[in-house]
Amino acid sequence: LKADIHIADNGDGVSPEGKVQYQVINGHNHEKMARMGAAIAYTPGMMIVGSDQTSGTDSDGNKFNNVGCAHLYKRSSSGSWDFFETLSPPPGDTKANMNFGQSVAINMPYGREDITVLVGAPGAAAAYVYTLKPITASWILKA
Image 1: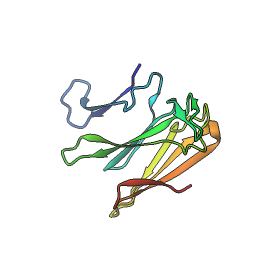
Image 2: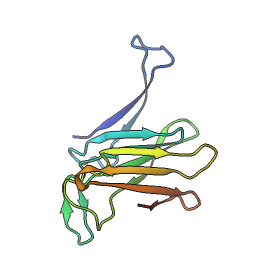
Image 3: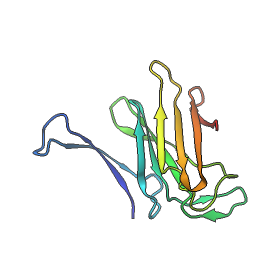
């Protein structure tokens, strides 16, 4: 199984239903039963997509099911969504059934380049805050 996210534009009235497929975003890791699209949030230039049932590895190299991750996509100048980065829980926090990515939020203040994302992991009773460092295009875990 793989999950695809279909982004539709219903503003132009081309089809009888008033919807035209704009872009299909394929699951980045194509892991079976990953639940790509469990949660989605976006700003005009960035989108975060939760995939709360992917497997993960802890700091000792142990592999667990339903750890989860969140994929980030950046809007290109042509208007398409391009894969940018995958966020995973810190290896020291990784455990089975934490469902990282079951809820997501994104904030990009107007006129600024910094982006903050919040990723929920209800199975671990935790939420993780990451910020994008624009100069290096890297994500920093804040809390």
